[in-house]
Length: 428
Figure 1 (cartoon, one colour):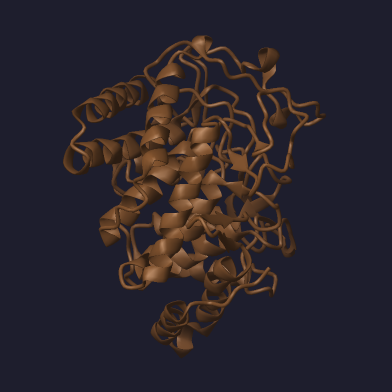
Figure 2 (figure 1 turned 135 degrees about the horizontal axis):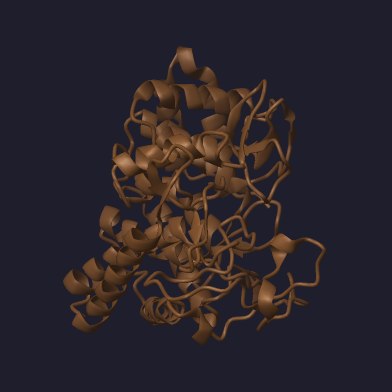
């Protein structure tokens, strides 16, 4: 599947190449490969005006990945109606899926019954996978809000959007007390990260004000049910909903519901997520259960603790964030790996000593200075195994050993970092 690249995109890529100059020709080459790849190979537009995005080498659309794949094109959407309509069409498709099942994380293009249909949960032919992840609901809200803010577009705020928002708010409220949740998930597998314990309910939790998640954005099961980075993302997107429903939709009831939930989640983070690291410094835990257990770690997938400023939860120079950042970029994080070719954050989703291009790009995007961003861009290009594209994970001692040759999310994170370095920024 390939499609022609819009003229505006070609012109934008040429502009970025010019800005990179001779000194950074390798950056420009990777940018042009990555920026074009998403539109050319993963996008399908339908006659109904919606857009379907493959995640890459998996024939399904993830709510999370599809947002990240489209986000850098927002820089063009203000001036280019074709790009604006593609993004608007994606939001429409995302919220149509959310209305089908807000607990699902990945969907088929048609109700063809593909995917993990043998999982023990409420599957239907539209659903590729039904691992409940908070971020699957945060990302579409983020894209809908940013599209409106950047372009003034309101076409994507249709009936499905408003119905989906209600479903999301209701689900997050229910999952503040997971004992009352209807959600169960079990998979017949040898891989414990792909299923939930306790008859599909997950490990025990007690109410904290935060909202529960079954799985991390890696699609691996949470060890403890309150995933702090995802609850940080909830805080950000609930503020988006409060703004939209107060100023644009004039719906005080929905705005108040978003605000009430936001206040509770923020309070929960402050009361339960702040823990000491090995040096006694206060940092954010990755997961907690409200019962006194917590994990000090970070995962390469976004939302992560590393991503907190990128998401808009806090400032890059926030003291607790900086202490957290220092901790997770050290051996105290069991998924931080160091090698001859690179060092960075990996995931339980990939082999030991494999770090992720997404996490390296994010390390650059959350850096306090241009020099660190430059170093990350150089490292990303140096570890692409000569493909001029990003991958999922790669071996810290040999970047030619990597997972997922075609991974659109990682490609677009490289593009975001380069654009940020050149002064193209989207305020969260």
